[in-house]
Length: 289
Image (cartoon, helix red, strand yellow):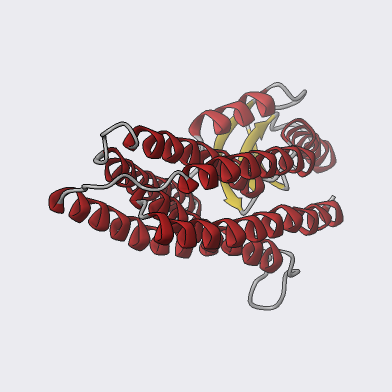
């Protein structure tokens, strides 16, 4: 099972690399066209893509570092590397998001007199189409290898496609004597960058501080309770190592059972949880009922 998980991490690199290539090309294209056309919305969209480059690089670095096997000072492996990289990326995204907000706010205060050139709209349409196909690829890949990181990248790809569509609407709308619509959209894009940064920070920090889904933990407890020979589940804890879940629980069994029978029940609990929920590791401690 462990070899398969490492193989999945290696396969997940393809999605991150594809995202990086797409974002590098599109961000450069958008920033150049924004400078030529005078579109604040397209400029904000381009800067949004630069943060996506950093986020995708963080995913790639995390996937590669997570493949390092356990060693003397990392006995549980390097699975959490991906979350640390995501946390760093969120800080960078916060910085760029606030910069976009400030720039858009200044444009609105100073007033906008001219609508941007329509070449900016065509650039936005092209970008939306490209990011939609990148999203489809990464979503399919994430479902195949069951990677939360690649799925998060896919969702980010889709949100970028929608941002580009919003940019197009703003640019087209500004052609109809509504030039203020362009910087207003830039303001919204800046808000979306900050929102995405917060979501990445929240998920990463939650995992790094050993936070875990209480509902999922309750499901684990119910499954353990149903195993033959288990009198009850005294305590249960779970934590995440990257995309891997480790569960520790204390079960009670009939006090008259010999050690071999008690060990067999504990093994059945472990196998039941691993097979039903694809958990990486389960540790069971047995106590007399």
